[in-house]
Length: 250
Image 1: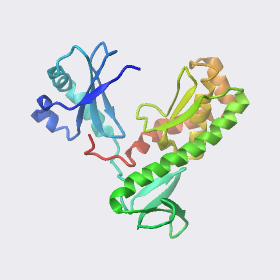
Image 2: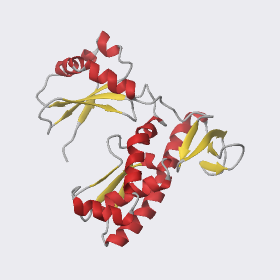
Image 3: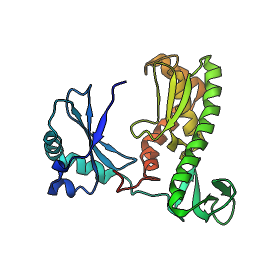
């Protein structure tokens, strides 16, 4: 696997870049043939990828030349909702209130039905609570995805090599040529039928590594309401990236 190196160079400092109010990350990739620019929605970071032979100063020039595009994309990001005490986050499509419960010998996170909204009680020291909650959500996502992938794999008579859960910012799921299915842990915040659709979508790729008619026919067998799920992700999907986001994280 080709390695990508990431760094932030002091030479990129400028008034225009500082005014963006977002970290800038520069990456060198051996396979890159040109400069590319994207915005990480989960980390709210501007990412420039350079070919190995490019000088670092070209990254700053490239961003400046596309500064209006960068500003527009950053402005379009929903307001960040860090995993702080008292915030409201969705879990399987239902609104929950986060409660920092302090040191405890109980489970890292417990769901409790109290008050107007169900609550997620996060144990431990406050400084560790955001990470503990994120890890718990990722485990819940893995558990749900394991179950739904197994159902769809049995139906299509395929065998995934393994399932990986990550914080993917550009796609909700992916299927490698080796049979590894990767998913965003943020799917656990969406309604269950949305997670189920993405699971069915990636399992279908084990039979058809494309998006042709035969592929969509396979997905439709498992998810007759796939158009509704696709529409939900188009309308509400980006909103999921604001939960747990930290605006000053590089």
